[in-house]
Picture 1 (cartoon, one colour):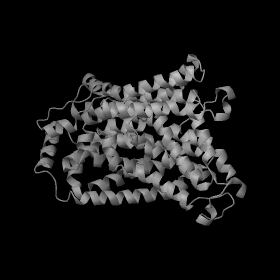
Picture 2 (tube, rainbow, N blue to C red; picture 1 turned 135 degrees about the horizontal axis):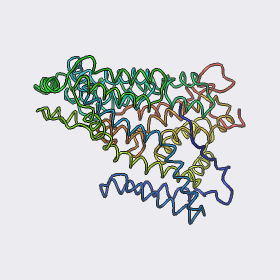
Picture 3 (cartoon, one colour; picture 1 turned 60 degrees about the horizontal axis):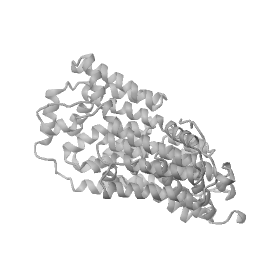
Picture 4 (tube, rainbow, N blue to C red; picture 1 turned 60 degrees about the vertical axis):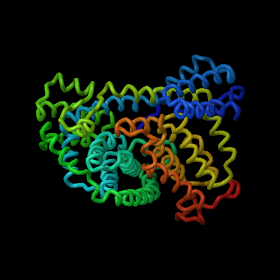
Length: 488
């Protein structure tokens, strides 16, 4: 389970003379939206520079409008980076893991055998299903995408399925399995910050998440119809032949994947599990592929550039290694620094405070919680903060409306964790785009769960279906009336 290195402040924790007004709080937020929009669309810039502009604007607002010292704002930046340090370290390790799994023959072998048993028409729904099973078993969407997901990207390319569709199916399955697994760190975090018993939270999540996944699966089945019989001529044979000629495809090459998943199943966190996979992959390179010790670790650092004689295979199996993670990590670091600065200046607390003032009933509370989680994903670039800030800020309101804590835990996770992969500068979006090789906004239209999960949450809030009060014995719309606290 994730442990917070600091607790975000509420509005009441801030001295009255330093509490930002709504206008002051919105200034850096609007600036950030404008900077990112202009930078990405008009100037065709990567996110790093617009994020740095946003940091500068927030710093100026904090120092000269809110009278916060530079030293205190630096502390906020450090807190933000510390909050996301686990994500940064995982990025370092996962880039090494992908490179070493490729050179060890693990990913080539999965592609080889996957092309034998999968067809274009069923590939997308089966990809989502396989990803659900793995993510539920190990409790990690990131590990699933960085291992099974990378291999399935290669299989999809061989079958002629567009990469954005494959990435969307992988993410839908990975986040579905993650949300309904008691081993997931975000699932544990959502239960912890809302004072909800873990398995109660898991059971509450399964209904909405299950509906969203089934609807997503239907979408992938529909997409699969257009690929019926559409395997590119001779492409599968070309890929399989090139793999067999350049890699030893034997059972031993699956050892690194088994070790990675075994560590995760045993309860080890993502970082040591992935690290074990790197060392196992290096060992497999030595044993199965005949690669020297020095070359194996050079691959971990610099990636792979295979020369198989088949261009499509060279492109599928090219990786960047540890060095290649730097571009991704600069985005994550800048976004985390901005999130920490927004928290330390009190801007996030002010936004949450003003949101509370417009909530007038159970429906608006549920929708407001979901929107708050999505907003935190945008502003802080860290899915943990999308759970923690709404979870801590709005807990009192759920008590006032006599709602069970499970309603809050479901809301922050259904709208928070699942949408992180839709934000190009969020750690989740940056990570998934990096490991799957598809830009965030390109795979977003096919990542159905990212839209359906919060949508179903909003439907639940607006209709009252599945909303439970503390004095309720069953979950029903009549028990989930929209009312003011005084009416309960």
